[in-house]
Amino acid sequence: MEFNYKAVDRSGLIQDGSVHAESQAAALAELARMHLVPIALQRQDARGWREAWSRPLRFGGSLSNADIVALTLGLASLLKAGLVLDRALNVLGSTSDRAGIRRLCADLERRVRSGSTFGSALEAHHRTFPRYYITMARAGEIGGSLSEGLERLGAFVERTALLRERVITSLIYPSMLAGMIIVTLVLVLTVVLPKFKTLFAESQITLPMPTRIVLALGDFVRDYGWLCGVCATIAGLLLIRAWRDPHMGPRLDLSILRSRWTFGVISKVQTSRFLRTMGTLSRNGVPLPQATSVALGMITNRALLAAARDVHERLKQGQDLSKLLDRAEIFPKAAVQLARVGEETGRLAELLTEAADTLDREAQGTLDRLLSVLVPTITIGMGALVAALIASVLVGILSLNDLAF
Image (cartoon, rainbow, N blue to C red; front, top):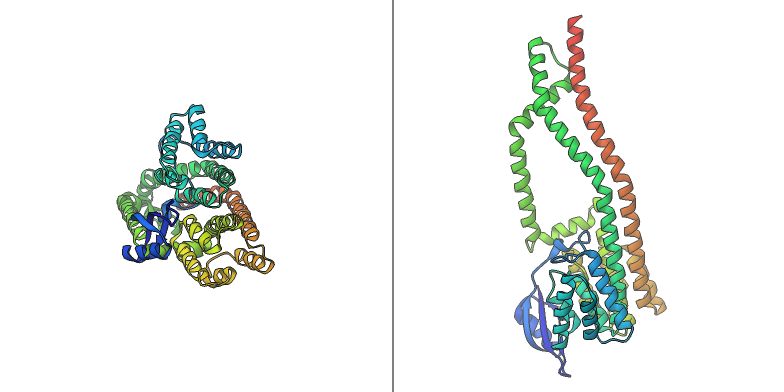
């Protein structure tokens, strides 16, 4: 289980974050081992698949992708110009013409002025900012380079939003085409075919097999189509329940990671976020085990998260990162190889960032190829289905003509 905490360190500063423990007592013991005095400790709700890479941001209210990108990059620019965080938030809020951004900046400024870290302030708006966004911002804050972290985060959010829009745009035409063809098929099977069925019955001939199959399919759709809808709804609800189950959910996540139908995209995207956060923190002087602990918040797939937690625990024992990634057998091979090279050359932080860039490019290329193939595949497949239906009816009609002669 994951527990969110707010605690006081030895120097009297307030720290917040999360720890993985089997119980609340174990979480308290872990905080004591870290020399932290807890102020608040609360179990973190599992978010799992709802924050998968395909929905990288869940913006609340009236905020759009463009609003968040502008807010992130604008804040990074003001911090780089020398403004302190609360002053930068005040400037952004006062100059924005969007009411949602003004309210958000005002609340973030109030929380920062009251002593909260920027990560804690963002955590209060977890319905606006997803877990990975908060983690990346916190990583920049811990590493002492919040402006650079926000700059990279803004660029990442912008790339992700553009990719998502391109995917949606590319799917509009095939989705409309598929919907129109499905409606056409249902109308043909339930309205048109019964008229031909009467004609065929009066002729008392043995119809060809394709025609008999289509007529039987029409009867099934007309008589039991509602049952198919009920079964599909029940199956969807059961799948959602299984996904939320703490025991079944990680197994489903693992099956998704290893499925050939995902083409490794989810694994590459999630591992890229994980390695990029580790590399950024390590480059800023944060010890690797602590950097890994922060980077765990970048992973939403529960199977991959369990493997990353095991890597984190073994790193604290002094084991090599590349060997741990390889032993997990779930991380992409490119990540393992570049981590090994980084350890051998003493440039681990740099190579982790390079591994993240490599995985991002591979995932982008895979998605581009899938989209280029998907549209013609759906078009040809649906056209072939309609052609087969029409051909089966025409074969039956030709049989009637043969009987007439």
